[in-house]
Image 1 (cartoon, rainbow, N blue to C red):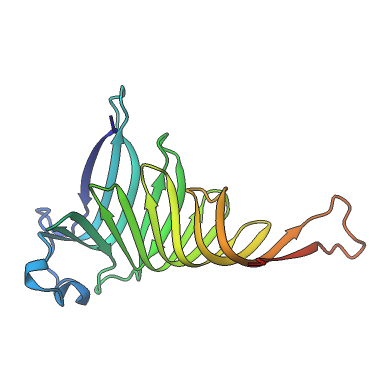
Image 2: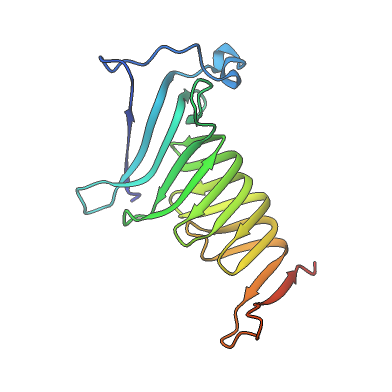
Length: 213
């Protein structure tokens, strides 16, 4: 049986009564949609959290936490939630925090917008995506998929990955949430190798790596 998911929203609002704050309107991308496809719910200054209760346990554990200036819930053919910065907000991007099933932080993701698909337990990050893992690894791409159940990251397009020992570029990345293990197609990059006995000038050996496909 799949773990029971509990989703809840903590909306930080500026009005004393806690009602949704009145703004000039949703982002332009939402305003331009067909009226039949308009969101069923809208909120501003959002703290959106997805929690999980594992079988045999009572306390819930956070798996995803997103902070965004604007949220829209769409409940048409499928239910999904859009989270992105609000045009009146000082923040230019939304930020998501990923956690493993033990409740430990694995990565921080910033992007222009996030989509969370409730039934599939999947989040998509779109536009100037940056993933900073707790293992000092930085991934840059334009589109990223987080599979909550599999605890995996996928980036089908161009990626740039920096670690304490590597600078790699390529396509079609798939890896775990911490980016400790990953696969990249059509790789070009550079690996830094540190000798136990450095050269006299203290320089580090550099090894270039390039995909031969």
